[in-house]
Length: 384
Image (tube, rainbow, N blue to C red; front, side):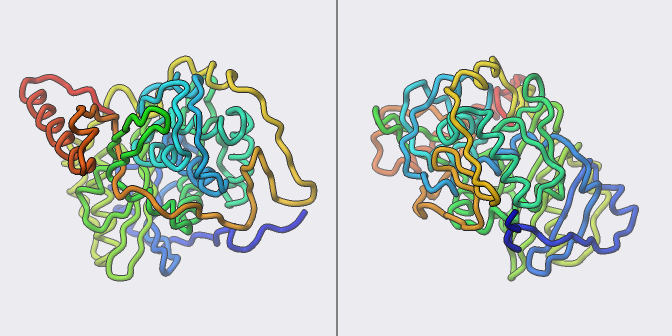
């Protein structure tokens, strides 16, 4: 078997010595904080412990779609992909959406229907795509991970979807080598058009760190009841490039991430007292990002596609989805904004000369309504 190129196998991670009390104070089951420039691990805890990564799984799904070389494909949304719940863009069966717009929906708003549409389009069905996902993970060096679906579901027929903080760091370091991935990962809004009816979708990000922390440049959030609150984040300041993976955070992800990044940039000590007051800033919906409904149909409804493996090599292909040492960044053009749950657009908004500004006004109105609901003691229907 041909050996994998060196750049596909991330180097071993070595953490600096830490005050045990400092590690203990961070209420996260597993995490790793790394300086990408120096390759030093600044903080870590249980980095090889297998846990559910929830929607962080979509990071792998998205980079595979980008590297397929088919980002300009018109993807006909299969009915199977529309059956997943919740955190979805709300695509209808038969709608036609560009593959690069599905990547935006999956990464920015964590749309489960987009992730399944990507898998079925590229591989013919979910099972075939998952087989390639796991082979791709091994090539990257994710030897302690196993994926059962492209979205991050972790129960029912998709139980056993797991990874580790160390593996997800390797995935992140691999993915950010791709310019198109980086352009998507930092978006706050995704605005795109269905190809047949010209229906416009406007989605908003789940990543509150993008608006809370000025040095943030993405990347992905995740949550299920089993996985807890998860985050892959990146921050750049003064030629410092810091990556963070946290899994099953039992506190405010955003506040902890800010504190960790500030600590990395300044070299100052963590503030243990901070964590006692953070919980109120990161409440999550009772309907998690990667919940599902009737997923058995998603797994088996699509036609089976043949999996082709080239003997004595690490190259695998499924209907144009290639895994090799050669990166294909795909098209570099993308909307400057990307998103969260579907935003209902009025006729005037859809026809506006500046749709992004119109979306911002709609978002502002929705936030005002949310505040009003909170004052009235009602819980808004939202996803984390």
